Image (tube, rainbow, N blue to C red; front, top):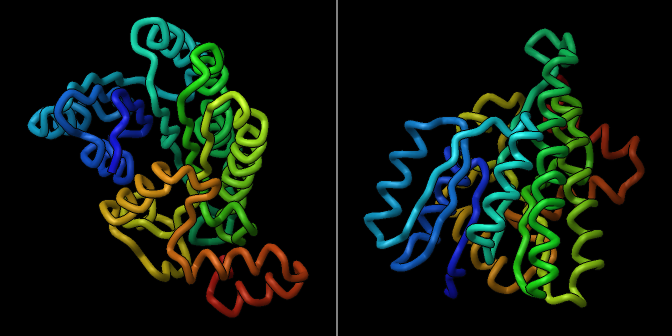
Length: 255
């Protein structure tokens, strides 16, 4: 599997981000690892360095878009990544009593899942276009196909990322820039375990990272997995909404 010379991973202190970092760690590879958990990032950097990689860490909150843009602008001038993986994200739900999502939480989710993704792309894209090469991977979700009653804002944010990435791909492909949308199902992590509702076809982060890397190398437009859940969520999107809602209730996504 071909390894890019320089990889930026946001949300690297999370389960999928960490697994991706370890997967890309190889002699001579530069890894730029962003997250909010400094201790976790430092541990991850040591693990990647043991494989011969050259890791650097940046601890910042993606909700601070101004700081994010300043950091990304400086990074691009110093070390332009070959692969940008916008992986950082969060989830919220309607609560155990079906009380609904708090506005403060909705704002934070949209800042991280949508606004920060677009801000990062907007900063790095001019340099990639000038070089006429590079790859951008955006972390969506199978939940972006059809909204789950228990996580409405999360589903909306991932649908936005999906549409944004697909539009970027069509725009930038003639310029030699590859854009891929990653659409995982349930991947074992603290965020996943905190989500309400069934979690069929649960994967480990390591398995997910392997499939993501393979999909990025093959430049797949959508890297969606696992296959049965991908087919099921896609069908939810194409069936009449009333039917899909009834199916979700039958499956246990009731709130």
